[in-house]
Length: 208
Image (spheres, one colour):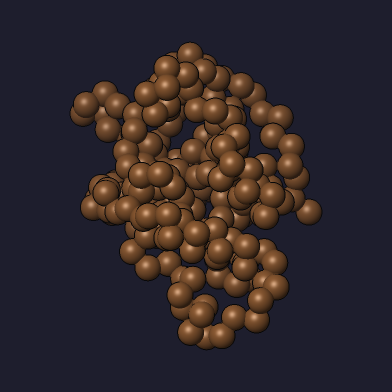
């Protein structure tokens, strides 16, 4: 059974842990917004968001690549994520954990490049409110399939050119040939990343 408690991991300062963060790492978040609470409730998990890391040493940045409901696919520096989220003057409203796929250590540099290219190539993919509701509908239907969807209706709920956070992260890792197991209906949510035994939670990031 999934747990709603935030994990009891070592809390580290971003500045101290920064050198250990790699391209292909995951940012697992437990948020406090209404969308976050909805996802947590229907998936029965503390996790509401997942994003991927691209380490860009040439410009001295660790970049978070993510899909968010109000914008779509975007890039944001991890340092800004922790200190000035969405220009709020405060860090991300919730808990933030760095995680890593156990098979990532076997990836070649070319795989990192392919993932980075995929992540950047899909910047700007947006979805409107109707598409957000389709995404939330996929979550509800995957967890509690109360309505006997027809084949045609199921296709309407499958990913198209819009991405939930988990769908985007899943495709980014797939570009590195790293797999994450979806649920029995083929849907992927932040909880599925945490459930996968190949995903290791490394540390809770403390706000600077």
